Amino acid sequence: MNSQTAQVDDIRLVALPSAVNCTDIFIRFSLTEWSLPGLMDDASAAARRLVKAIVDRTDSRAPGFVTVRARVTSDCLVIEVEDDEPAAPNAAPPALDGLRTGVVPLNARGKLVWCELPLPAGVSGTEVRLPRRDARRSLVAEQADGDRSQIDPELVERVLVGLNRREW
Image (cartoon, rainbow, N blue to C red; front, top):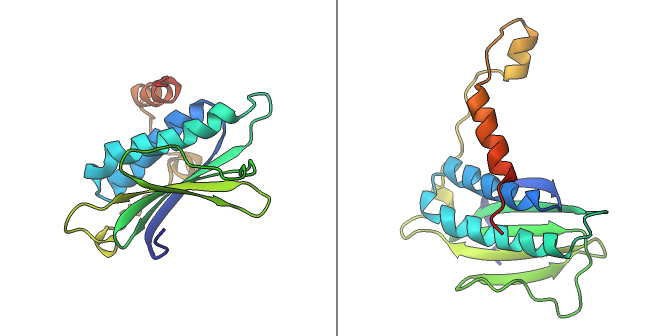
């Protein structure tokens, strides 16, 4: 696994079935911000499979947490999924066609499962653009000051439907 990180983003989720859909949204959002749309479908599918493997083994009455991380290194996109279940001896990551994968035990606090997707030809990690943020304050801060901007109810509905869809 290449350790020179050029860009990183992560999210911590409860290890329940909704984490699979949240992972999909997170990966797609991160890759959109990094202008890597060509990796979106493969990266999203790989991340969903890694998270689903953890969710399938989790007791839904007492779920743990799962951290999903996307890292861009000099030559690849690394998807890392960290949970708080100890790694079984000789644990193997889920098989992901054509992708380099691995499992790393985390000192009695879980394990990290990872996979690597090569960056598109001609792109290196140092060329991945940083996300641009507007100077605009958050909607919450603006509303506290008396600005009553409306949140589009259709957007909220689409987000909620997306989080609840089941693809597994």
